Structure formats: structure tokens, C-alpha cells
Image (cartoon, rainbow, N blue to C red; front, side, top):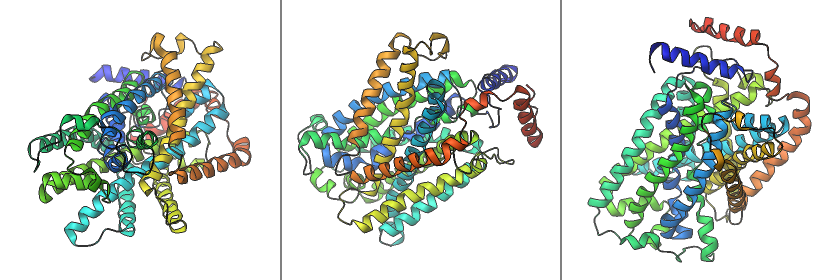
Length: 518
């Protein structure tokens, strides 16, 4: 898109945003690939599928990779399609929150926003903690120190700090990192595939091994154990709403953002299966692997040897690092959009845009603080109850899965209700829609979300249930203490005059020395 065509598209995007009552405050500079890349990088098959590989193997054995990954992937594709359709119809950075408020009510929107924020705290904390759990033992081996819970937490904090800085200084830097990250993820998967296929020290397992069911290394009956093990794949598929949260920064968003959401899941399905298949076929002794603190590191080291294995593991860790940066981008944009409508205490701070970098700077740093706090909470819980059988990572990921998927499901449910009442019609759909398949896909989406939300909080992961219950109780308190007095909902923005919208854009243009005439 060059010259006048790009300029015309930017004007059209801005005018469509005006229909929802918002000024073009964020810099709209992301192309279609960048929008796809932020979701693909946030999903990050080299983070979720890798960091929870031991969890999947422990509960479901090798069959978890052969059957569990495809089963979850196919249902998540339905969820992604349902969300993409809504992104095309309502292209604002508030995404899920705005969809719910417009299709239901401002109270639905308020709860959706908060539940989404809870899930995002979990996903950012889980991603950044994954970086630390992989990098810490690798650094320990290089510099001669022992990896402990304390050193992992320190590295976790440092990683959050670095990503906070990257996001603070601008969307252009983050977009370039995400573009690189998408290609990097694909490249590392191919390197891992070739390395394990041709350079393993011993023969690979037969292909049938990948589909071996009935073996669990847990104390659960196999069917229950297999279901618990689905957390590995389900957590990997979180955060693809990032394409919707950066929609006000994307050119031609009603087409590009929906494709970003859907294609990120589809590509992750294919490349994730290729990677998991080769890693699983490289296993020499599954029982020995699940007995290690990090089964994935153990399997790669056994298959490729110390030095070669370490190089591959560092490549994987760097992919996780990129994923964490994308997660903070998405989370901060959601918080910015919600605060723009006065949805949070001290909203004026979290909705503030940096004049120098055109980013929601204060929201970015609040994301960093909250993500660290959630991992710290789990550490304290483990001190109180040291016999807990679930890892910190499993706790963080379960919180993110439930929070995010419930928030994904609410606007889909409200869309079906609105359609039933004749309030949401064909004319309200965007250019990206499911046509006659919309309703059945939406229904299957909701059934899957209910199923996995229950599954993620059953014992032994009851700590995640306790954390979520505590958060929901806090929401109820805030409903009466804050919501009724302060929150007008995104509907309030629809009452903003066009003169005020243009005044805001002129102000930003003057600060940046740009020509933003409408």
C-alpha cells in the first residue's frame, strides 16, 4: 500500500473509528503481517508447548502430543474464528470489552474487561516466568551458579523490566521485533526438526509412539490425566486477541486484524505439531524425562548432546523472550482502552499517552508490576503450603486460560443473544465473517470454553481456582464501590462530539509535528 492509497486507507480507518466515538490517538502504522505477528508471537509455540511439555508428558504420555495438541487446536480454531468475526465488526482497541458492551450492556463490558485483564496478568506472568525457568539453568551452567527459585524470580523480574522498556519506547520497535519474532519462531522450529531428525545420538522412536495412549506418570486414571494434560496445548493458544488489541494501530484493520487472529492460530497448529512430534519421537526414556525439573531441556540434551543441545535451547529461550514482549504490548493496549473509558481506579493515569513515544507508558509499567505480583503471590502460597504438587508455571497458566477464555466467550454469547433478538443483523457484520456457519461455530466455541474453564481449576490445580475466586470477589466489591459511581461505559464515548474528536487529533498532531487533518 503506497502513497495516496495508504493515505486514503488511513483516512477511512480513522473515520470508521470515529463512528465508535474515539479519536485516532495511537500511531496507526502496523501492516497485516505485523498484526498477525503479534498474535503468533504471543501464542508462541516455543513458549507454551515447550515450557509445559513436561506437564503434558507427565499426565498424558506421548499420546498427549499426537492427540491432545490436534484436538485442542481444532477447537481453538473455532474460538479464533468467532473472535475474528467480531473484530471485523467492531475494530476498537478495547476489543472484547467493547464487543460485550455494544452487544450486551456496559455492565457486561465492564466484567468482560476485568476478566480479560485477570487472564492477561496470568499470561504475561506465565510467559515471562517461562523465559526465566529456561534461561536460569542455562546461565547457571555457563557461569557456575546453582539455579534456585530465588535466582529464577530475579531473572523473571529482569525480563519484565527489559520488556517494559521496549514497549515504552514505541510501537515501531515492538512491531519490528514481532515481525522478526514470527519468522524466528518458524526458523527455530525448522532447525529443531532438522536437528532431531538427522543429528540425534540414537535412533528416533517409531511414528506409532507419538500416538501411544494409556500411559501416564501421574497417580490419576488415564482419561482424567489426559484431560489435565490438555493445559499444555490450551495455554499455548492464549493471547491471540493481541491482533484485536492493536487494531487501532493497524492499517485496514477490519480485514487484517481478523486474519491476524485466525491465521496465527492456524500456523501455530501446523508448526506446533511438527515440533512436538519430533521432540516426542526423540525421547529415550519418558519416565526419566518426567522425573527431571525441566523435561524438555533433558530430552534435547540427551538427544543432541551438551553443546549442540545448549545452542538449540538458547534459540528456544530467545523465542520465549520475544513472546513476552508481545504479551505486554497486548495487555497494555487493553488496559489503555479500558481506562480511556474510566473503567479502572486512577484511569486518567493508565489512559495517558506518552507525548514522546505515542505509547500508553503508565499502563505498560502497571502491567509489569501486576505480572510480577501474581508470581510473587504463588511463591508466598508455596511457602504457606510447601506440599502443593503443582508448579508455579501451571498455576500462572491455568489462571490465564480461565480468565482469557471466559472473556473470549462472553461477547460470543452476547452476539448470539443479540442475533436472537434481532439486534445484531447481517448489516452489522464486517467484511470478515463466517456467513451461515457463524451460529454453529459460535455455539461450539461456547461449549469448548465452558469445558476447559472447568478442567483448568480441578485438583491438583485448585490454587488457580482459589486465586480466581479471590479476584472475582474483588470484582464484586469493585462493582458496588467503583463501577456504579465512575463507569459510564464505551457508550459514553459515542456521545463525544465530532468537534471534540478532531480537537484531540489536532492536539496529538501538533505534539508530533504531523498533519492529521480529517
